[in-house]
Amino acid sequence: MQTACTRTVDVAIPLPHLLKPDLATMAPSQDELKRVAAHRAVELVESGMVIGLGTGSTAAHALDRIGDLIRSGALRDVVGIPTSEWAAARAAGAGIPLSDLNAHPVVDLSIDGADEVDPAFNLVKGRGGSLLREKMVEGASRRFVVIVDDSKLVPRLAASGLAVPVEIIPFGWALTLRRLQSLFDGVPSFNLKLRTASVDAKSTAFDENGSELEPFVTDNKNYIADLFFENGIHGDLRVISDALLRITGVVEHGLFLGLASSVVVAQKDGAVVVKDNEATSNGI
Ligand SMILES: O=C(CO)[C@H](O)[C@H](O)COP(=O)(O)O
Image (cartoon, rainbow, N blue to C red; front, side):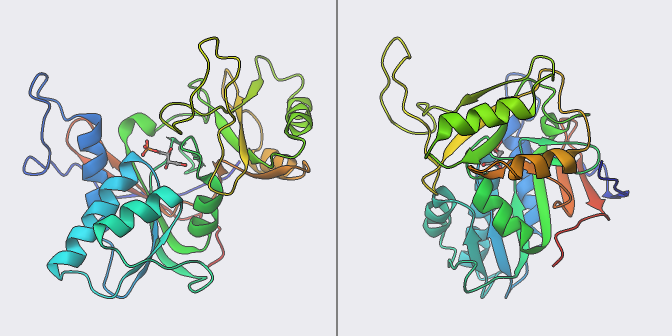
């Protein structure tokens, strides 16, 4: 298990001027918390930087904010490396100049959301389907800042009943699923399924019996196998990661181990907490 030193840099900053409460409950909405975390992370962006641009509803706020700062002249000469086709389109719309990892193999700072964050800064990512490019860009970053609302903090990864995504090649996908199943034989309540295109993920029609669903297809033209661990993932995550990657047909998985440099957490009480991980291992 990855160990990490946590240094809480910035605590309990009430942001009444930033937080827009839900008028019914007077509590900040989840989207508002995502926006606050994203804006806090964007304060780290400096002119001239190469920025990894994340994917998802939290990252969207960061992209929009970077675009606003470019338009106002507060940020100059930044270039963005998108982690998905979605991020490329959103960033282009926001006016962020784009490039790629071939031109910029070292990224100064990546900002992205996560599906889950454990106490050792391990993440589950890819429930939006962009895990491969996210891991490539964020693994090539000098600093990777994760932006979340506090609902994403978990004591153990995958214990909430949500999936750990694994990107697999379409050729022989059923065999790859069998091999994944074998890897976790004996793990109580483990199951897996091929992700299908949902109305959200892709506008593919499916029949009313649900029997003819199209597989979800990633930006890299691959499929996703979703792995479910009822009681969360137990054991050494690096050993599990290596075992997954040894299966022929597996391209990458959504366990992001030792990659996050910092996590910016927007809490329901209005505080923003920045936790720094002194045990990152992306080797940049
Ligand atoms: O990994 C991702 C996409 O592949 C996203 O970062 C993750 O799913 C979080 O998304 P959101 O900010 O919408 O909750």
